Image (cartoon, rainbow, N blue to C red):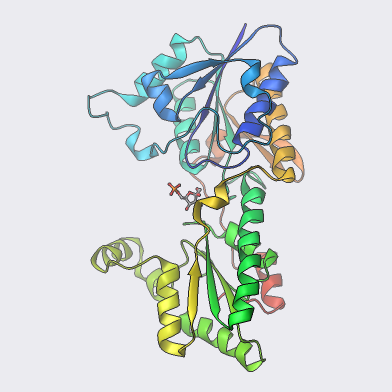
Length: 357
Ligand code: F6P
């Protein structure tokens, strides 16, 4: 009998179900006896022993279904070692629930924070496999995370829709794309949607340069400008402040979200009418795109293979088109960010896209 636990944690994304389906199909096609336990609502389910014994039926027809059939929640890594309000030791509780079910392994689907806790559980002696999920594509050690291209599609469609109304009204439009720390999604959707200016956290912007880029378009006879702004875009002044000082500054100056701040500055200084659109969580919703369905199925199959071989303590990623077992301890806690020196950034600049730097 093979006993496997599944857990989805952190912000959801489109191909979580597709990935779980790939794992379970890969296992059930190769072992006689299989029990799959789904811990409900992320690490919460593992801490408090809230789980469901899942059947083959649960994994049928979910390739195209967004969200996660076992629910998710955010459980910050830094709180894992802090007892809950009733004094429960969360790490011990997770271990106990794992052992109580006599699991052979636990597969954890999630982003960076989730990965850190997965690694902690590995260090505590559990058999863990991590599957890299996130629309941000910011997980170190894999070229791609599932969810990213589905979100790129949605964010691109949002920019496409804004284009037609922006050009009809001769306005500046800001489309705010998800990504607090990493601008990969904004970069890809910005390029795909033909944004004129792309502002991401890794390349701090100078508002003068942003206004210059708008003026340049006006002089070329283009009456509108589309700006893709990542949630975590940051001005050069704020980037120079340092983490602590910036935190204090944000606390003291109840500033609006960065997109509205940029919009107000542009309006005030150039007199141009600016509108802000925030597609928000639509970027994480709906069906996975075909690319993500294929990626998830491949990662799921590779995960099943690792389990069948008893290979634990890995993240299953994709590198140079091939699925790969990446030692969890080597990647946990690292973030994959965009670099101003990346070829894609240089190419975008070459065709005239401004990064406001
Ligand atoms: O990490 C995925 C993500 O969608 C980010 O792009 C975004 O900044 C964040 O989650 C939003 O988090 P929440 O769903 O908790 O508001």
